Length: 349
Image 1: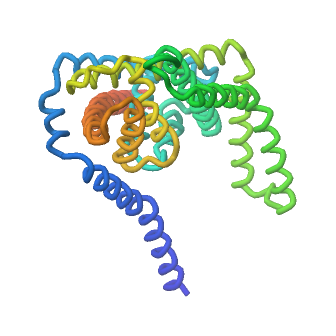
Image 2: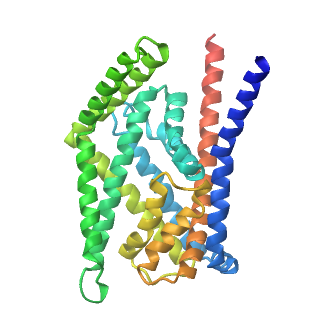
């Protein structure tokens, strides 16, 4: 009997290993192989080797500002506004890095873990904060795309399909409506699940109590979206985060010698990469999926497929380097802080 149980556990572990590691790895290798078939790897190396150092440094500085703005966004929530920028900046940095590296957006929950570990934030509150942040990210992304299309021009030589502008505006309005009514539809969902749990006689089980406690904590966070003041601040910081990220892309393109695109064009072109990174389809390190979205976006602006893939890989490699450096610094800061608190606790006891 025990042998059967051990065998079943081993089978489950193997399945989890395949789903979490092997499948994403195979998808990543497949996508990279297909993309490199249409682009010469030497071109990618040349773009990296011949990059302009001053533009790279400027891009790194702007990219660091992205993390600072994300930190300021976290501070807008009542659950986190007592924490300082130095408390939240390492967490924002590590969360962004883990989310960039892990496939299928599985790194998202690292925010919940880090807030819980270092600042004792409730799990449900962390999930609620993450949900609202992502909703406002989508609103800001839709506004950035719509604004860039308007600035780029809808007539003459710069004409683009007006349908794209209409879709981006409608998408932004839809997500805004969802965000402002988040607590209402979440409360309906909780009520439905409560009826199901009572029907299945799960309500008194410990795991069910913990689950509904999390749901209540999430609802408290989502209720804050009713505040117009908070919504404006979240939208402003989300816009600042995306606009800074696109500016970093623009400087990176300058660095690798592609300077013919204006800033609004870079916003339009890199939106494809942003979308593939925002939805849960990204591969390991976003390699392959990011380049696919990048190439599709810039191909619409006249860039060749080969140049789109090559520049996409070059830009992404620099972003991985930037993110890794900031994540390493953040890890050391958090480790030092954790050791210091542990030492203080030992001294008091």
